[in-house]
Image (cartoon, rainbow, N blue to C red; front, side, top):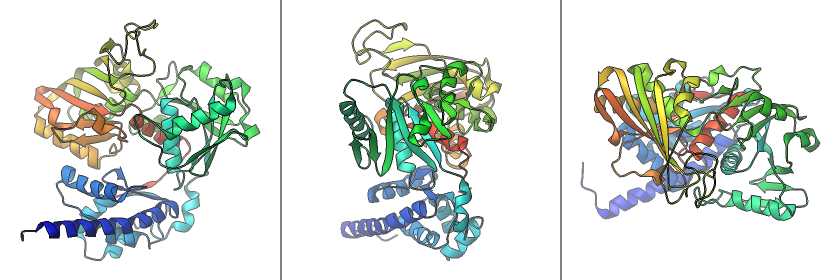
Length: 483
């Protein structure tokens, strides 16, 4: 290989920037016109900046060991835009690696073979499902992040339409609406909203990137008739956590215009607790109330399933190092929970977690095998689960990490499990990560049958992405995935 000069390195970078700029309208066309959702080894290419696209290409080198540049992917993206594709999720990165290794030099011919099931199927894209109305009941941390994700996805065949949010009225409703808009627009943890938000106080609506969202003020579900707002057959996402059992959540079903309810907290009684990617197939067509379980359960269950499938889990302990939440006090004050009344920004707070027991609701084969505790720590977001496990058979750290890397990149759980292999990452590096959990390979310990895994997770955004995946499943949104 010839030695590059600083000038040639910079010229090469500028050429890559130019190609990435050309990619953006093509990716947008695939998304909005053809309902084709593109990604790079699981990382979305939709609405990415030039730098974002280049970073996603660099990511491939880190996890797959294969150098991939926009010069490799651009010809494939350009050819895809000309094939009249039907709706699908397409991983451009994986296709580009396969094309480099096995391609015949003709991107169009390669894609016609690899994507044969959707080539020329654009006319049938409307058969992907009917648009589904979504209502967010409660507009706190999770509610606002769900709104951001739903608005982001509204332009490309997601078929979930955010029609309304329900909140309690607080005095001057016009001023209240402006504050709701401001909280959606600005976020101290997740940054500014990607787009434009306007508050229409006369009609009590928020207009976000062209999405008109009715703000309904009510103190209980019984006060609402959604059909009065043109909303029908809706999915209601209860973000309040006030009701967690079938009786309480059924209040939503008694409202005109509501078809089903999804709870963003662990469900009690007969309510099914669903971790998408693991047991979402348990949702029956006639299930009208479903729980998305907890953020911690979503983070650990995919990794536990991967380990149990490959090595078998004898028993173990889950310790959660969790960011503090709105449930805790800023300064010492009364709280009904043990220790949670002490100042959250000033203390590590030992508390209980039901996540270990909740694993059995998604993975019955692990029933009674896990214990758990939690430590709330003075950070506002991103948590860590430490899995201390005894396996049925022995392994070493290198073998275990390689297996989990493959699960993160090539298994049906690739949207749930992420993988990082760096000795420099810290919690803030995972803000906005869309996976349920991220395996920290550098921290893995394996000694025969005893292993310790460290799993990061954005307990707000990553969990919200899991909730949206359940919503898509409940609304019968189905996409073919390639490769």
